[in-house]
Length: 171
Image (cartoon, rainbow, N blue to C red; front, side):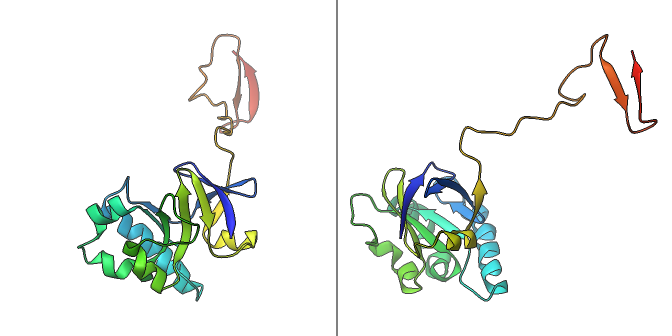
């Protein structure tokens, strides 16, 4: 088990930030938006002869209002891994609505307090890469390259014409 944080988009474990490869947020997406993402994560697991790679984030409220009572309720326990919100409960305890995920051993992340998560599978950080890719620290961004599209050229600027002649001319 690894303890970490979740900011609504990215996860942090062991001081590193991770972005899920296949992520469906039931609080922000419709069933029609979630389904192809989770199916793609399942297909990736099948290609690797392994477990599903998609992560469904759900709480009792979103499960009951969006998923329960649909054909997906019975099948998504096998289709994907679950990030479940179950606040105030001991880490690893699963709510009754997540029984199908528990039956398939697909309980992946327990959000036990707002923004505080436990990765339940393994304490091996390398296993995280089955589900995540590295991500930049939130708030950090790569600088936008300076191009004529986002920096107007003014009198006195040099123009490099690499597409036609590759020469530098003074304007």
